[in-house]
Image (cartoon, rainbow, N blue to C red; front, side, top):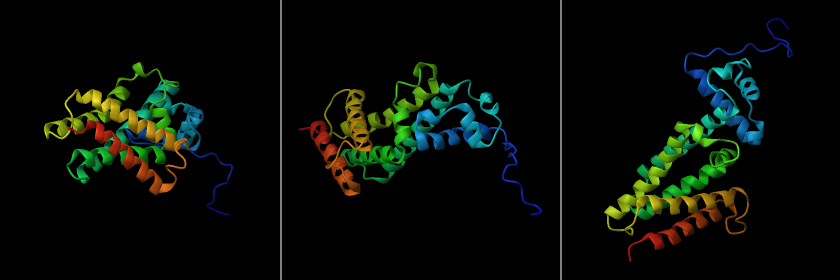
Amino acid sequence: MIGMKSQHEPQKPKSYHHGDLRNALIQAGLDLLAEGGARELDLRKVARRAGVSHAAPYRHFVDKQALIAAITEEGFRLLAEQIQATLRAVPDSPFEQLLGIARVYVHFAQTHPWLMREMFSGLTLERERFVSLQMASKAVYRLYVDVIRRGQEKGTLVDGDPAALAAVLWSMLHGLAMLIIENQMRPYADGPEGIERKTRYAIEILYGGFARK
């Protein structure tokens, strides 16, 4: 038919305004990661998904590790945004703030399981190469520290190094989230109600240890 392109006609690479290409490549990488994990990520596949030439990704990423670092950095940025939004929405009490963080963390892992695995994997990245990735990870950690410090200032939480207590919080959150997405918490966390119940119970136990007696 006149005006219709053949199915076999190659698509022309998309053109991007300055600054858009990097974000488009990261989004393409996120999509591929969600579909099949890190094994689906390489610069040629990302270029193909973004609709650009195979050479285009090298304008922003020197190799596959640089691409994965940018994708995982975006994961930490998204996680931080969601935690911040929740902390603004829930009551300003240490328990509710901790519970809000836990709910976001578990939900994020359920929604982005492959991204969550890659964000904390030490197998595919030499993390010391990527300063901005380390900073993004620490930005999430600071949110935990701030909640604990505010609880201490209110006289609700125990004294102690807030960063050390935040490490306990993150360890518990990550263990819970990863066990859930790997289907290792059944039958205790089956379905949304079970996951909510287990998440709340974990925070109740943690808070019992953190709370000032």
